[in-house]
Image (cartoon, rainbow, N blue to C red; front, side, top):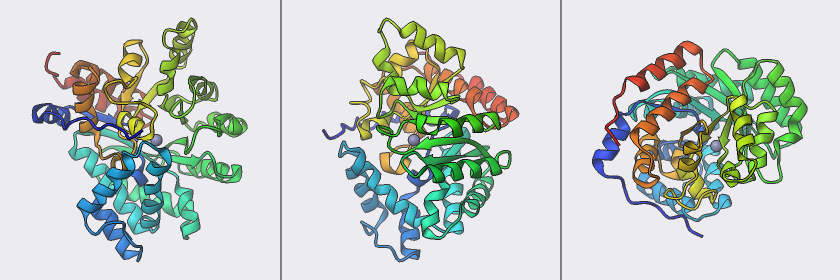
Length: 353
Ligand SMILES: [Zn+2]
């Protein structure tokens, strides 16, 4: 079923959402290019673009986002990865992502990508990570890079992605993530590797409970994930007899959910923003915050997500600021940066309501 887009937020709400200091923990760099940049990069590489100008590109991604299908949604990534496959392009995309987040009111950000996606296009993982980190460092926004592995790719590639993350840990890389299609590709396929990473001190955030069941979230926690990408299917347990036990387990491990409301609607993980599980999970006491996932594919940005949560999901500014503080506390960046970001969120005075 095609996803329903809510109306544009009231300008005053959107302005407040932009002013509010925000902490961005879940954004894919290959899903967050500016349309104009994507067009230029495609042109440089001699790749045909699906539209002639930035507005046409926006429409093309809009149509994919509202097809209500993960397959349609994912088609855009083949295009962005091909466009980004040079060190200069990776550095530019990373820099622009950090600048866009800073100008949208973010005070701390973690960006992610699977560097080995560029291997078949002639770029090795270390070259890709080096270029991405150079790009991020050019922005004044404090940020870090999460190395993803695609969970449906061969185990050897997942292992090499993890080794890449370990090599760059402490030099800009802050964590490791399993991304890609979830159903049929449980994180338990990589139990031994994830245990080694945890023992080596590499923080883990795993996509779980986005397209698959609540059990996958608990599984990821037991595998050592300190944060969960999405986790929205936890709502299926809300009100069940074992909910208290589930919440206890999440709290015992200090788990934080990186929820991406618009993306969830676009991929079919949630029906609408108005019925999105984020409000129910928050009120049930789950630690979580809101993020963009893929700004280009989902036609969004952090302030738009915030405005929609206020207008559509029944959350208040106080809720969103509290989520921001929790996000800062759960960031994988150095503690002094996290504390500074949390202080900026705390210093903001949200309007009542
Ligand atoms: Zn994601």
